[in-house]
Image (cartoon, rainbow, N blue to C red; front, side, top):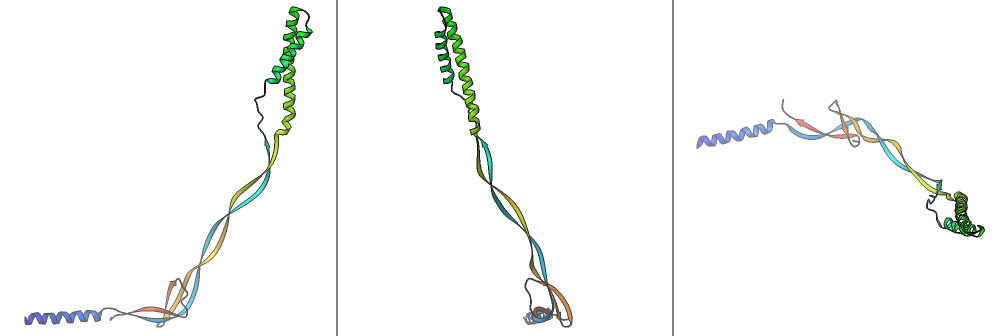
Length: 178
């Protein structure tokens, strides 16, 4: 038992010595000798929309479907007139056929002239808003931090810091036996 107590006392002494022999950490203040701001170039792409009014020409689609009524009426009227003009049996029939063909032809010519005159009314102009998006690039200098030079016990050191340190800089000091 006496040996166990001695062994316990010796072990606790070694633990105390190792704790004293390890590095000791504390803080102190160093004098700041130089502070240089560090800037970073940043590019921003900004979309800008530009709009204007433009007059555009429009042509209304022309209807290909036209009425057959004028052609039929022209044919009937031509047939009636040809029948009246023709003399006697077969001549009346021939006059009616020739009159119908002439009536159809005249009705079609009138329809074509009417469509040609109306064609000029099919062109229209209207204002349309047009827009386009362009990118404008802006470049700016942004402060990203500071290169700081400081002295501690006549020795110079450098570090990078996010904020300006002022005249003094708090430093960690490690003390350990040699």
